Image (cartoon, rainbow, N blue to C red; front, top):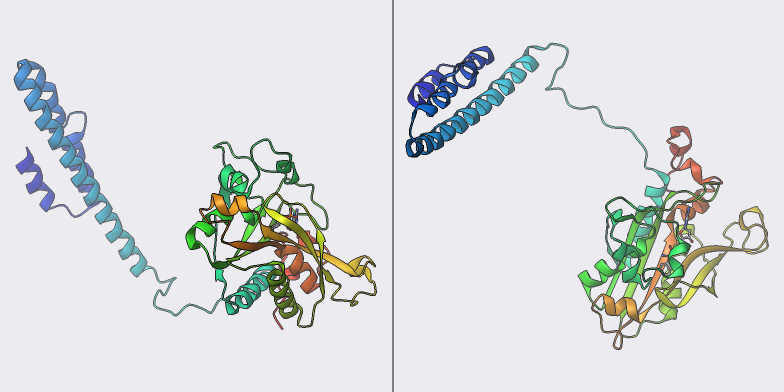
Length: 335
Ligand code: FA5
């Protein structure tokens, strides 16, 4: 049967013929099906051996037919394409005209600034384990700090990343100490949406670990970065802030880049704008990433990238970013 099948397959050149052969061998009244039916006349031992052989044959024939079928279909598609005069597949493509999303613009600008200061740029997943999002950054199970971020839990036990700090453990493990890295990313929180809160927004995390890293390093890097972004000297101040993964923790404010601190609508007349939570990495976080917390210290910050893009471009409503409204989104470019 096998020899006959192989001989017949050699002359096949169309899908209809192939189908006929399939029916002739594998169909209800096909040769191989017949062989199976005849098994009942054999004794137990012979039945077992013949059964195995027939099954093997059936598998080989099925595989061969499937391979031949895809080969014929590919040839047919190619032939159709060549005959079709509506398309000229040899024409060069038209250049794509589009614009970068305002958040992408700011993200790339920040990446360039930090790269020039020796920071590695890293990417991370959006679906993460509870361990990475919470435990690894010193927020144990049932700790009240979990309520600070309304979390989307998935059926498989994982979560949508609520903050870029979820990547800290992986990145600290990857580089060890000393290291400096930034990792921008999309974050998700189950928030009531308004002009300044989205359920999907971007942050950019930064870490620097070394033997003598202190708060003054943190202030220096933040000032340098912000002065580049706003293209002028930016004054910053630190206020105490609580985050379980830093000690001490701060809220970094900038003196309003529009009015220079005298008060205007952008800073709600206060002269200062809250921009970036930060602090010295908690020893527990270093230890959990396998870094000697007696020898090394480090800072971390979690910049609200979406909010920074709003400030840079004077966008008053955060909902514009995810609106898909091209008229609004196309007007931003880097000066
Ligand atoms: C955090 O997420 C901390 N992981 C930041 C951090 C990192 C602190 C490292 C210390 C060290 P917070 O929840 O405050 O912190 O969010 C940080 C920033 O993300 C905010 O300042 C804000 O700019 C932005 N952000 C938070 N929630 C939203 C939201 N719903 N829409 C838009 N931006 C948001």
